[in-house]
Structures are given as structure tokens and as C-alpha cells.
Amino acid sequence: MGFLNDFQFELISQTTIVHYIEYRFEQELNKAKEFLDIEIKENLYNNNSNYMKLLNSICDDLLEKNSQSYIKEKPLPKIAQNVDVREPIGEVIQYCVEAIEAGYDLSIEELKEELEEINKISNDDCSFNDFTEEQLNQIIETAYIVRDYHINAKMEEQDNIINLLKTTIKLVDNSSSSNIFRQSFINIFSIFDAYIFEYLKQFFSSKPNELGKFFEIKNNEKVKMTLDEILCFDSIENLKIEMIHKQFAGRYLSELISKLKNYKPDIFKDIEYPVLMEMVERRNIHLHNKGYADNKYCSSFNIYKLNVDDYVNIDSEYLFSKVMNTLSKFLTNIENELCI
Image 1 (cartoon, helix red, strand yellow):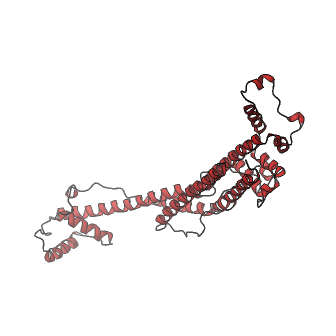
Image 2 (tube, rainbow, N blue to C red):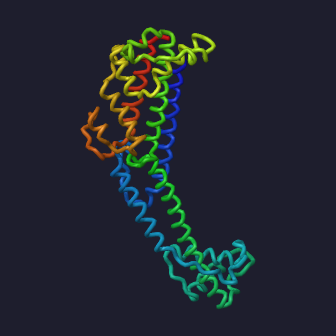
Image 3 (cartoon, rainbow, N blue to C red):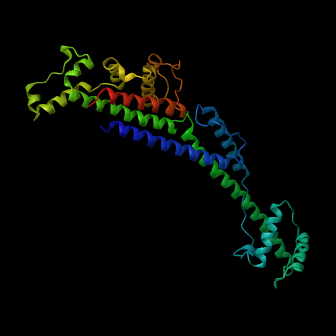
């Protein structure tokens, strides 16, 4: 059978996806840490809701600060429009921008002095002394406008990095409904669920006499069919398959696992039955109750002593150390004990 191989392949696929999301989150966090006042914790993916809430809050504070700090941009003076940075005007504007960004407050007199010094040591044929006072005024004005452009561009770059980080936070925050650990958990359990049903159907197709023992079926509970229904099938084999499928119709995964425990106890070798059943119940509340503990969860296999309306999160440790290991071992035991 290829069921187990398919499931193991899916575990590898889900693991790869999770680790890729973790890698992207760490990339975005490292980009943002230059301007975020936060310590990067050692274990980022287990029980991380409070940390991610703090990180989100710090991101929002910076976005708000930047939104209030953007400088209203002015149009460039005529002298700077369509200017070539290799021309004397372009070179002087660039010199002024660098001086302003270094903390100098330029005036026309200071600029004239600087240009005279530059002209003395320059070997170029062009002169930096031929600017009118009006041109120098426009050059300084341009430099301050360009400086403002640079400030805005830097804040916009920060905003882009922060917004991307906030997106990846949702993918790794244990309290987020879209986090990758939760999504992977749901996907893996859906495959596990289908595997159990399909494997058992095939097993009992080869051993139909065992079906009554497995389900503990009494005579009055056996599937009964009319002659007309029987005549719809072109072979006894197809009829047998249909009757087996009817026995599984409307059943739940938790019931099948419980009956497997009575039918073949060795399947649970090295498997903690309450741990496995808690996983089933946790899957159910994530599918049907947005991940919040309900009365059914709290009154069944509530091994973590949670209360009704507590959020039952899925983190990295639970997904990899508990779920994947337990389900993989359980399916291996099934194939060893129920050899088709």
C-alpha cells in the first residue's frame, strides 16, 4: 500500500513549507531590527502570542510615528529641473545635499567660500565661481528639498519593511488563525483522517468477517438491503464493498480510533491514547469553533486542563514534536498490525 508513503511525503512537504515561512519571517525581522527597539528572543515559534503582540505594537508605533513625520514635498526650483549630476550645477547640488545631511546649515556666503576652495584645487576646466546669487539660492533650496525627499524615502522604506514584517507575523503568531503551524496541523489531520477511513475500508474488504467484531455490530444493527438494491450491483464484490462503505458512513475519526484500541491494542504500542485523542478533539475545535475550547473538548481528553473559551493554540513544538511524531508512529503501527 502507498498510504503510509503518501502520508510521510506530506509530512515532509508540510515541514518544508513551515520552515520556509519561518525563514522568511526571520529575514524580515532582521531587516527591521535596525530601527525597531526590541530584543529578538531565542525561541520564536513556541507559545509566542505575547511576544508577537509586543512586536506588532512596536511596528504600529513606528508606522504611526512615520506617518506624522513625513515632510510635505515641494517642487524643485527651475535650476534643478532636468539637471545632469555630471554638470557643475548637479555637482554643486550633490555637494550641498551631502553637507546638509552631514548636519551643516548652509548659507550663500558659506557656499561661495566652499566653491572658491573647490575651484582652486580642481583640475577641471569648468568653474564653480560663475553662479549668480539667485542660482546659489536655488541650489541651496534644491538641496534642502532633496534632503526632504531622502528623509521621506527612508521612512517609506521602513514602512514597507514593517508592513511586510507585520504580514509574516500573522503567519507565525500562535494566536493568529492564519498561522502556518495551525494550517499545517489542519492539513495533516485531514490527510490522516482520510487515510484511516480508506485503509480500514480496504482492510475489511479483504476480511469482511472481521467487520462485525470491529464495530461490535449486533444482529439488529447489521446493514440490510432489499432485493432490488442488491440487483443494482453487477458483482458480489461490488456489493460487498458497498456494504462495507455503508458501515463507515456517518462515523467519526474519534470513534474509529477508539474501536481500533479495542480491536488491535498493539496498534497503540508507544502511542499515548489520551494524547492522540486530544489531537483529534483539538482538530475538531479548530475546524468548528475557531480554535476555542468548547464543552466537548473540556469534558473529553482535556489533558492540558484548559477551560471553555480558552484558545487552544498550535505552535511549532506541538506540531513537530507531538502531532507529526504521534501520527506517523500510529500509521506505521496500523500497517504493521493490519497487513493488507
